[in-house]
Image (cartoon, rainbow, N blue to C red; front, side, top):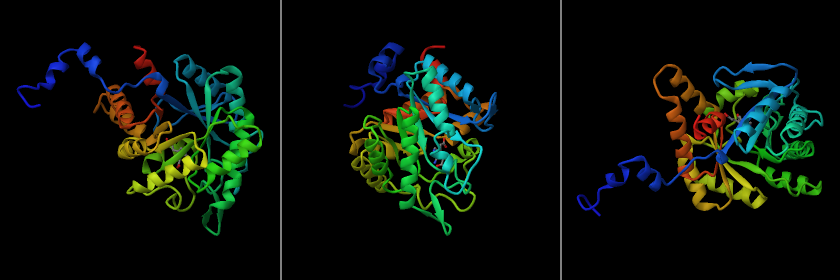
Length: 325
Ligand code: PBG
């Protein structure tokens, strides 16, 4: 149909027409709020490049989790920053580790909020890599057991879902087995399936004190230039038993989200990462953009590309905006 028979503007004339033909909606159900837990009491340390986000001691994490819950946000994603790090990241799978203690505290106070725990070693290893290091090499198979122990200890502490973000090959199957063998058949796995080696994570590494102390993460995270490989990565995790697959980062990888959505019928998550958030906040602070409009535009774009849910540092702001205040 061509002009003048077809006039697309006819259905853009007023907000009610626009509402009626809107194809994509962001709602509070889509949002997952990341939180950073530290040891101690009374700690609320601002993360500079991520305004509104803090390293929080337990009582404050619980408070934030309750606020998220009250706003109608269904889930939080919990990261832990331990006091002590070592070569094997033992803090990641310690019974009284930072995530384990914090999960318990959240579930005590907000029992029906979904607590997803990030399963990785990089916050807990002194070298800052996501796996075990031998002779300067990040070794895959020996790391799997540590990741499985981490996931299991999170489940034992009460985590509702575990989210491996390490990008070691084979970890979803290993984690699934460990959960199943120990009575956690009902605990779902959200796998960071197509996780790219991205400079957009830099503010997070400041937040989580998890920057690699040598080298980089290119031997395990994906090359930003690849998209067929994303399909292979995602398919592998599906075969290994993932319940939800994730693409990360989100905005620079909308084509990957779209492609994964076409190929896979599992629920799909996208992680709008720290750098995406920091750029918007920085430009807003300079008065160069309208931060709130850009936030909503980005979230709707991520959904339009095919994501069912979005891990985002904007979760609280977006929830408030969507509720009309
Ligand atoms: C841990 C992990 C990272 C992020 C989530 N889990 C950092 C990394 O891989 O370096 C990044 C999240 C963000 O940037 O917001 N492996």
